[in-house]
Amino acid sequence: MESARTNTTENGGSSVTPAVDVTDVSFAYGEKPVVSDVSMTIDQGEFLGLIGPNGSGKTTLLHLMLGLLEPDTGSVSLFGEPVGAFDEGERIGYVSQQSTNRGGTMPVTVRESVTMGRFAHAGHRRLTSEDDAIVEEALETVGITELGDRLINQLSGGQRQRAYIARALASEADLLALDEPTVGVDAESRDAFYRLLDRLNDSGITIILIEHDIGVVTDRASRIACINTELYHHGDTESFVESDALAEAYGATGQVVHHDH
Amino acid sequence: MPEPIDSTNREHEHGTGGDRRRLLEHCGLALTAVIALVMLSFVLLYWLRDNPALANAYSQFMIAGQWFDYYLGTNVFQWAFMWQSMATGVLIGIVAPLIGTFLVHREMALIGETLAHTAFAGVAIGFAGGAVIGWSGSPLYAALLVGVLGALGVQWLAERTNTYGDVPIAIMLTGSFAVGTLIISWGRGQRGIDIEGFLFGDLAIVTAGSARMMAVLSVVVVAVVIYTYKQLLFITFDEQAARVAQLNVDAYNTLLIVMTAVVVVGSMQVLGVILVAGMLVIPVAAASQVARGFRETMYLSILFGQLSIAGGFALAISQGLPSGGSIIVVAIAIYLLSILLSSGRVTAMSMH
Image (cartoon, rainbow over all chains, first blue to last red; front, side):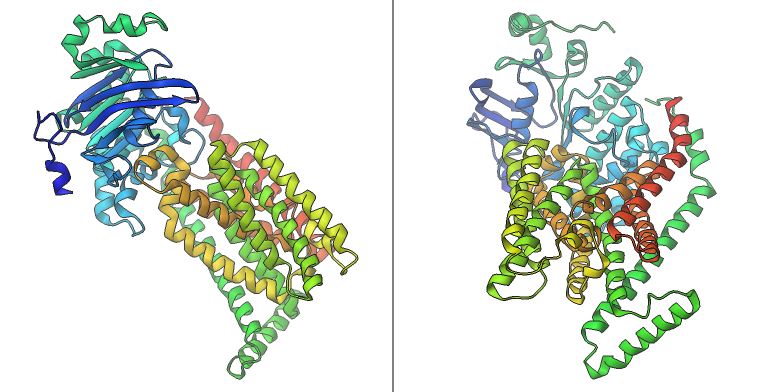
């Protein structure tokens, strides 16, 4: 593990292992290419906004990064390990799109769902009082301690997303991957949610955020990747705003979503 | 960052009332555990009753049964074959809802039904094959083997089609039942087959051997669920996040579905092929109406399962009815009650 963390990247630029390293990755569903020849490096501590029109392959790219999908060609590494061999699952917190988990129907309390963050650490052993303390701290950090005994499906959208973030914190994740976390969340809670992400990023957690609201991304993220099957832009936010990447990526297929804050 | 949090509702729900409720649940579970241990010890004693060291314990047990009957005015507890049925029933009431809690919330409720039909083909093979090779053991062993193979087949299909979709399930369900009927029809000439007992459930077809098999399977299933509770909960709640956390999701899915097959085969004799899925689903549905967490859902499922079994047995024995139908009808009555009970809470919730 130690050697993995001190590996240098191939271009020799940085002495710290990047959180995610994507090299020449392509992926197709059947004949239809979804991600084509994408290379990018996400350094530790970065806040990356991943944007693109609907159906542009954002979620697929994120799934490739996390090892949920295997690329047809190219390679992905997480913290210096090839993603297939990466076994420190607790270092990654993943908040999927709302529709893919059972939070809406299954009777699970907020505390139970946050405790799942400890499962990768615990394996088959019993949870200890230390695990419990970490769970309580995570609830505290995202500000939902009072909701611990409520059922997840009784929470508002914003509160529910906080619960999922708390699960990632309880797992002491170094990398937080969020797929459109604020769909269906009211504007006020959404602002509070993004302030929370900012704080977590300041404390050193790497964040990858898929977001359809470009205003939010340019406000919050330190770097931006704009994709529509191919990678149109990957760099800091200022250069993105000045470039034509947005118009090019969205040009053919979609409508830009802009929210004024 | 502070979001307006409405905690009044919560405090109202979780005062001393919550504590009393938890105490009640724990008492119910403890009682269930004691009953299960009594049943397991009966199965063990009956098995070893020829051992001189245990013969006395066994006859004491049966004498206690006679006293039971004397005081309750029944004609049940003095008979060893009734104890075998009761032991099987009590264990079904524990393991079926236990596994069902995960199945229901993985939206795999019909898997149990499918595996029951697969196991039915196994029963048929057991009967017919037993007649051919001259083996007179319980056809349940064949059902267990075929059921587990069927479970692995369903899992194989699901992994390839990326879903527990209802089309492969329907094909599997009808296909294995079709094979079962063919074998039964062919086998009738070979050996008298009491297939109705397996279709609708019959206390009389529970043998000492099948009760013993259920005892072993139940202990194994409960132990495995305790050992893998965290993993099963995580993959049930959020399969993708569990994958990202590097849980071996496919392996746990396979484990769950194989345990389902095991529970289904063990439950088939009392509940019947057609009704066995009810015990996996109905107590869990009732518990999910009123529970305030996953662990509580599991506890209440088991309690409701026990109540269904007890009520169903009472109905079946006193009125001479088939056990499967009786148990499921009682389970559904509990389900309807739980909906009535929770409807007040649901309306309060939807007013937010």
